[in-house]
Amino acid sequence: MRNLRTFGACALVAGSLLLAWTPGASAQASATGAARKPGLAVCYMYKFIRHVDEIATWHKSLECEPGAPLANLDFYGGTDKVLTSKADDGVMARITGFIHLDKAGAYKFAFESNDGVRLTIDGKMIVEDPGVHDDQFSDLGTMEVATPGWYPIAVDFFERRITWTLRLLWRTPGADGDLVAVPAQAFAH
Image (cartoon, rainbow, N blue to C red):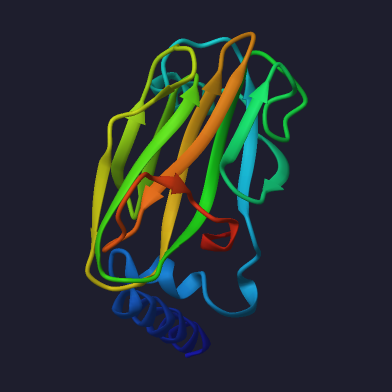
């Protein structure tokens, strides 16, 4: 009888979680309240690569070492250490957290980067500039937002050698003009 009660309780909890989960909505709920901290989480792996796809491959065999959280994604690094890593060359960064999209409509995103980078929001690839290159701007990516709120964000970035830059830019719905750096208050983890 005790096993039956335990099984019933577990089934009730699992069923409740399944009913509460919907793509996109679960991430919004987990980013609210006291659990949300400013900035983005980051971890690092060290290897010289040439394409952002290699980050996922190396993540299977290399430990991703946590670094200090990033307040934003607006960095001109030059030849200094990459982000909050311990190295200035051969760095792969996996950056995760949430981005607050506070109004419905079309958001435009782009990177200025050196080297490769990929942006995923709410499980969808929005922008990528995947290979080795000097400082350059990516193509624009668009995300249509029906419901304002917090959305999961993931950025894979690597710096091969010499200099690095990582800047995430946006234009919010209804805004005119150039893209601007996404402000720190739009990020949480």
